[in-house]
Amino acid sequence: MKLLKQSYVNEFREIFVEWYEREKETAYYWTGKDGKHCKELSNKILFLIKSGEQKKGNEILPDNQYHDRIIQGFQFILSVCRNDNVVDEHLSISVINSRFNQVIAKRNNNGKSTKQQKRESDLRGFSLSNV
Image (tube, rainbow, N blue to C red):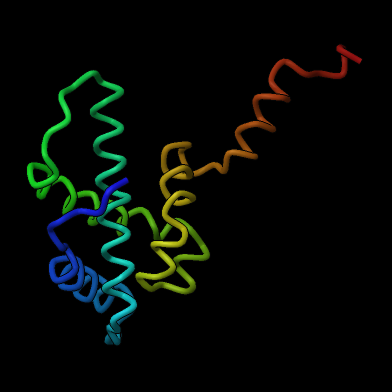
């Protein structure tokens, strides 16, 4: 996937630092690496938006047409990442970026991991009478 031309680093930084300070009641020390992770996150969010549009059969718009949805997507990620114990315990932009797929998958599966869902589906219909 090509990288977004527009940078969301400053907007993501403002949103994240304010959110972090509210959630953790302490200041967040921002580094250049956080900016790099924000760029990666914005590309991942755009990818999800576009793949969702494609699945619905909608026209794919130029990247700059998704600005508000990318910002909303980032805010959404922050709201759900607290349900991931690893992210919550080690809360930082780099951890959110590295756990992006797991956080989204867990959210899409109603908080259950893919393994938990598979186990449950494997056990559906199973009873001792089947043995």
